[in-house]
Image (cartoon, rainbow, N blue to C red; front, side, top):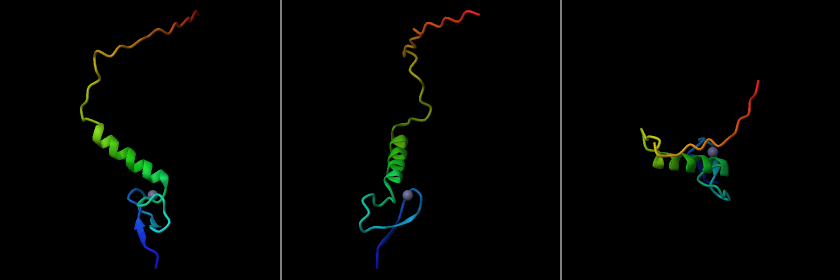
Length: 65
Ligand SMILES: [Zn+2]
């Protein structure tokens, strides 16, 4: 009997055997989970944008109407 695991991302039951992306159903779900994990880890709530960051507006817009 094939062993089935539920993909943690989309909850699809996938075969454990011969599944290179286990415990996910596909590489896509693996990347989604990885992305969610890193976001949760690195995103600080209420993080402010560094006021010292320079905004370089060197774009020369020549709009003559
Ligand atoms: Zn999935």
